[in-house]
Image (tube, rainbow, N blue to C red; front, side):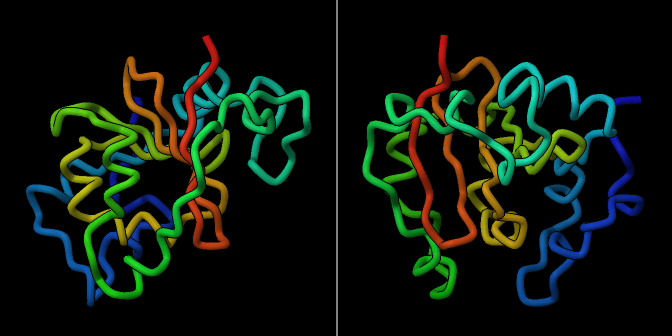
Length: 158
């Protein structure tokens, strides 16, 4: 089994927030991975050695400036206003709606969904923004959502 039922996910409340309700068909597209499956994805795309963004060092690609050539984007203003995800983030990603995306919180916590679901309900995901990464399946672009309210726009190595 690669996914946890949403009812068993400890942070499922972010997807059931009363002011940001997600319709059942889209809620079914939000799939928390099991810790084992999440670890494989994290190790492959984020870090082999560190299990959370708080522990990255300059040796990790995510701390190297060449992977983050764009200006940071302040997402918190749009979040507070109840607006759509900032246009700069969408322009950077330029993914099709049916692209499979992974919201990577830590080595044992990754959520899979489709890009259209993420875009429409991005505010729910931002309750988990603590250095979390958004990556797309077979896509080089990456966004890191920081607790400070900023997002870093970058490219994965390779």
